[in-house]
Length: 219
Ligand code: FES
Image (cartoon, rainbow, N blue to C red; front, side):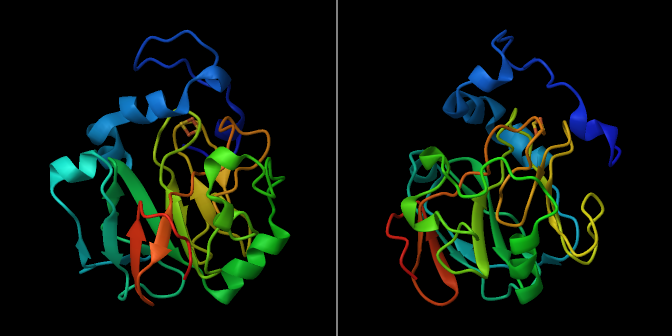
């Protein structure tokens, strides 16, 4: 994986299901289904700070598969970190990110030429996350950790160790074909991923407990 040319490679054919449709025409829900548990779990990588001993509760596997809300306690999460182990909802990895002030201000001067800077695609976030941080609380970002190209799981890169991003920038880098997303999950234009990372429905039950899959959005 390199930092340069990989980002501009032509999109690879979808070898998982043999579909011949162009990547842009691939149905997002079908793609999420196809990646399944194996590629999601295997593909999840975290660069930078990871927080051990995170406590989260979840319903039974059967209920979870049916889409039951998942409750996550992120009280151990520190500024600049992303929650780990990465929780899942409906079989999808969920990135819970605690942005520090630097990260929030970096969003206003992104080095990326953003494809959908204002979150105009209504399918990629609830209305309450249609704002510059794509969240209900600027410091807490909640995103589905699946690349909108062909479903790999992007790596989180902090401001401290931004290997695939410039000075003072962090974000999510997809190792499969080089798409880059900023710390609000907004994709850079010209990369293979067509959309921003999805924001799942969520609400805060308390200051440090979040419920994924439960509409509301109010802090
Ligand atoms: S899966 Fe192709 S860039 Fe992420």
